[in-house]
Amino acid sequence: MEIIKRFSNTGETGRCPDCGYEEKLEVIITDDGIGSVTFYCKGCNRYTHFDGRSI
Image (cartoon, rainbow, N blue to C red):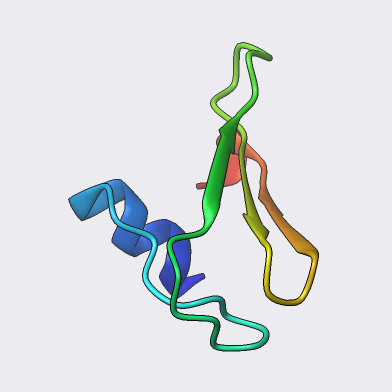
């Protein structure tokens, strides 16, 4: 949950919450009308999704 808070407040992602990869994570903002955000880590190849309605 820390990653979405940081991104909402600063526009930065910080480290991957799963592997700690230090490079900037890819941010995918879904055009679904509810503001869903997905973070993709190239280090561990994981996606972390947040539904816009529950943020």
